[in-house]
Amino acid sequence: MPQVIDFPTLGGDRAQLPDYVRVAKELPAAGEPFKEFRARLRAAKIWDRERPIVPLRFLGAGGATVVPSKFMQALAAARNDDEVNQAVLGRLWELNPILFKTIFELFSQRPYGKDEIYKFLGSHAFRGTVPSRPALEAWIQLAVTTGLVKAVGIAITPGPSTERWAKKVGELSMDELLAEDAPLADPAIPDDAVPAEPAASAPQAITSEPTAQVIAQVTTSAGGAPLPPALRHLIEAASLASPRGRARPVPPSRFAGGFSDEIKAETGERLAAWWREVKPSTHGFTPQDFALDPEAWVEGADEVLYRVAVAAALAFRLDTDRNGVLAAFKALEQAGVLGDLYHGTVPETLPAQVDPKALMLASLAARRCAESPDLASALEQKKSGEEVFAALDAVLGRGLFRIELFWILDMLAQLGVVRHDDLGSLTPVPHRLVRDTLFRFGFLDSPYAADAAALQNAARAAHAAAGAAGRADEVLASFAMAAGCAYDCAHRRTCEYACRERLE
Image (cartoon, rainbow, N blue to C red; front, side):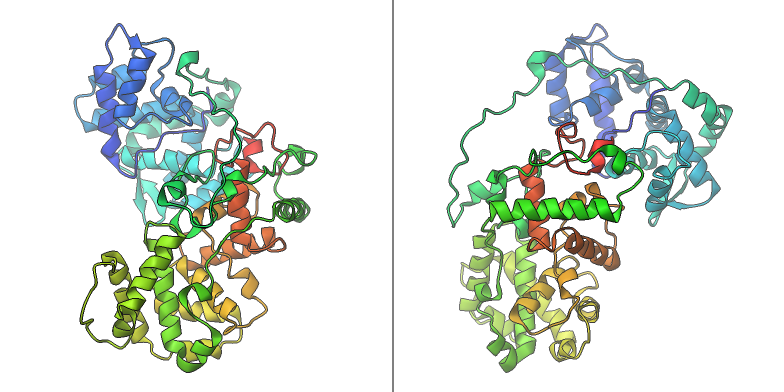
């Protein structure tokens, strides 16, 4: 029995299952050239350029001439959604019955949260190959979509298809499945269908005022995902010297059983050494960018806090670069809109240069701040950074801000209006890219953060990992971009860092 641990995602709902069915129905019985088949996968948004094996393996398709696999024949013959669901579940069973049986038996006992399931898979009780956390999420998504399970909050429980699979899952013991363990051969991809590696070239010079086109080309990892808006000031990271190939590799045997404090300390030292060597200029936001200073806080702390909140909303919610954020804020300021909104008056005029989305975000921030006019003075009375964060979360959270709260706290720390010993562990902004990197390095058990407490834990982990080097979020994000970090990493066999990807 094979133990495949990579599964395609469906975009969050069942929308893509009909695309798989259509691809299967349209494939001629005699087959078709691979390039034509790939073109149809691309049109259906199933093709994954960086990981082509994943959808091909799931479909059971490959070779110079692609012919329908048994799974594709089952999809093509399906007469309704239920038959499609059963065909997909059958494919999940074929690809990894050990994982299927394990998860099935867990949620059959009681509701299980995804974190609980992943912890079980990472324990000695699980005898199979452990998937990555994103891969587990993809498996569960397929199970929910096809009715094997249903989601109840953050937990999964038996779904409408559970009863049909109970007998099949119960008939085989884990010992039998493990005894028949055999790898599944990867589908063949013709040589001329593999995307060529780009030729090496000297990094292009990046100006201090990058254009939107340059920003759009900056990627976070080998996976090619664009940088989130609040990280787009890290424009130089893509051309930094690689942090790989600088030291002896950490043997996987040292962290196969877990990431010890010693291992994590070594990772932190390597990060700091690399950061000191490259010495990048990150052009991060400062209070001065928004014309804020400690004197303004003394004169009107509540209005300064409001303006910081507006700046945070623009930095995270406008899909633009650093210059775009500053331009939007300046337009609101020069038009008098910020002052009008703060004082609860309707702006007399709205110049064309005022971005409608920026205006909406500023209005939301104004309304929330108006509900707690004494928030700034309350922050000054808090005795720790954690108390300050909790106060910000109580007022500016509640569906308005989440990750932005760390950015706001950092701006207040830069202004010097809050000073606490634990601020350093709460000011790193735990972007998803940062959490992914922390997860790979073993500083986090999961890259996902469903609430403020989980985000705080990620910020503390970032500080522990890279706080000694500088701004921890910038260090970790820059490292991921410069090293080409990604799930299903292409460098896992040559990278010297203690990373979960090397255990796959």
